Image (cartoon, rainbow, N blue to C red):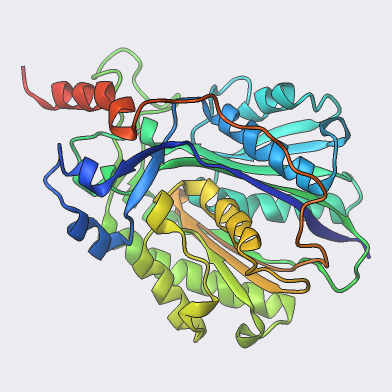
Length: 362
């Protein structure tokens, strides 16, 4: 049986930083308040489109795998923030890369999008339908935010991460089957209801989205959803929790991560955490964290890795994989975003002012 393995990895984190101290200049909050509740210290703000961040991450992943874009035959872009609904953002990414042989699709499972993508990419390779799959998680969540609402404004950031998935020669390595699902009863806990064809296009304030967010409900359901998904994924893979070398969870909230690890009875030393640097980048959190884990030497040949995520829908998912022998790139790429001399606060100045005007009656 053919195995599907990760052969390349890459990331794109925009250079402009928005710190907790920056947020405190226009919100009733503080660095201490945000860190205590979320674990976040700062996040990145993008001055480019989602597909542009995706391209940079993808080029790094392709170089790492030693793969030319022309050889990619499937592009999956996990995002809740597509450049356009028609055509898909994945189609623009294909054009930017010159991946002219590739089929393309956007996958919106919100924060669980990359995990859903891993499952789809694995199935495509194992079935023999595709030989080289480029899977990217890329988000610009800050575009949706109302900067007068502290509960959501402090949580999210922008970024992209990518992996290349191909048939593997090592019978012991690969992406094992996981567990995916959706907790439909909690849909209203995390929702942007006025972006899509169900929205009334002729009334209401334009240029502002309703970001429904019930933090308590999300926390409760995320702890259960991620925990159950992880347990099921481990059982299906035939791997015990104590055999996991590294957990790469969705980076939404440090407390949710701690609850997941406690459920699995694993030490925090086995968990990759970078939420303090980037905040919640939705579908991009796991690939960015995975890329950094490899760069830091925390992923070794044959490492057993567990991913788990939870997002709007309310989607949940977990995948187990065993790393291949190679932990170093075949080659590197010089791809980078255009230079930006503005801070995150400066990039957001217009959006902050717009949010304030819409929030002020009259």
